[in-house]
Image (cartoon, rainbow, N blue to C red; front, side, top):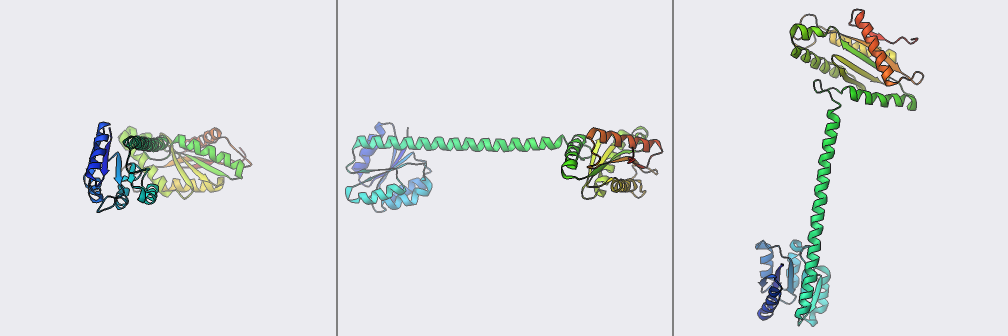
Length: 325
């Protein structure tokens, strides 16, 4: 049952209240004045289900007591005030601020019992509200965790784990957007499909670990030398795609050739991975304009074909799409 604090300076009346409420199964603590009641609320660590307070207790009055303990009790602990008729106006003013009900003296025990039951119902409603709010908060936190996990998974499946570059799935999604924007906003873009020349020698002559290290080093160099607006992707194996937003074919060829030259440089700081021959790439470059829209699959197929032609011709070359083809 309930745990009730009775603040009453008339011992006989306090005992009467206690016995009656104990007969209903409640546990009651007694305080002879507001100071003792305050001590019980603040120092005893009690979470009272209801407070029954006589407004005229001395030396610390009920009004002062309620004002002091209200920050602790707040709405979670109903307060029932008892008061003599001469102080009823003040009691009503107190009730509006801190109490849910005022009983006038002499108190009818049945009215007291009914009032306590009403107060405990209020307490129960408040507890259920707290439980509901706590459950809502838990659900919100769970949803936030699930949302963050979903975002993490969304990003993870779009990043190549070895090179940490965006992968083929992310490339195709981005190209869908770029192709749509070409017609909608009359923009253009280009891409270079690049492949490392004679990459198998790293795996065959040294080790697959060496080949992986080469891929990571190349990815890092492409990332470092890319300009604002360039996007570098690992397409698969030793194939990379570089997307040049808002650039036409000629500009994209120049940019792709700059990437080729950076990798071909003998001062590339990659330790002994490449030996004396270094590493080179070949690439095919295609562009999409409002006058020449291209579906994503066709775009990638043609760029890949041009790349293979460059490799077949000796490699270390960038081959653009012929505007007339």
